[in-house]
Length: 403
Image (cartoon, rainbow, N blue to C red; front, top):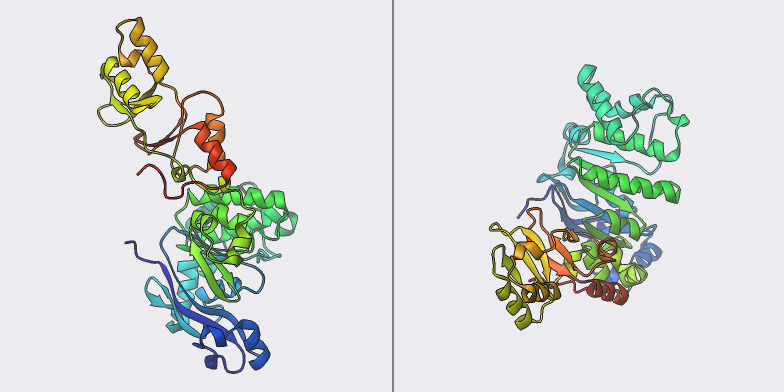
């Protein structure tokens, strides 16, 4: 089991004159509104626990007042927790002295803010290099890091520009580049795209997805937008009134909501945008090796009632597909080899491809969609009818069929 890079253990944050008196109250006595009305205290985060593994995109999603932005500020101790532990690489942030906390913020984690947080009197490259400057890094090495970060976010050529000359989307790229230039393991992103126009926001989301495949970072991403959470997150924590009401993968959130609150959120979500091919693929019934005689193939297909056979080499890599009518017709015409009749071009994709993305791959033709791993081993298949049925019903077999 992979060790956690961030762990929250029973974390509370209560604002008020005597916050410790609120911590640990049972649920029936610690309703957020009731506590506010009777004591004047505000429960911002209530008994939250979770673990985040390295390189995970962990999304915290909730509406205004849910506690999500408070939670991310507890992680880097911009806000002091009332109770509980926040561990980064096993060290409790709340117990760090000033020097250790300063090092944590300079070398271990960076933060990207909703309002960009740029310095208006500095150029783009000066803003990007600000964290490095604070760390005392100068010269060629610093310039290389700045250049690399600007390249990653697509801002080459804007180095000397002032930030007020940039659009909102470009300013957010500067903020992201500043975090990347610091080359910290952890990125804390507090609603970084919410202030952007919808089109620019989608573009930034797509660029962020491409970016996460380029740089190895652990990201805690805060958002109020479920669609954004489902699009970006490996796992999602949904918060309400300071409590994490559900924690799971996008597929788990959509297909198995924990309560009516989550169910209301996901009721209009397109399953095809969330469910992967692995959720509905089935195990192929007939796999045959190159060199198998055609008569055996035809008999096997008739006995099983299968319309397709999948041809592999000695290493299990898919080489082609044979259809039942094609095999039977070739056998009647006279002796021929399997390799002469198999179709070497066939639709294929990976197991994590979303169902809506699978549809164009098998919109035409009779051959099913082959689900392959990186070594071209066959994991499962999806016919066009199976895919359309899954999209129309709005639910896939989330246990997978290729077991």
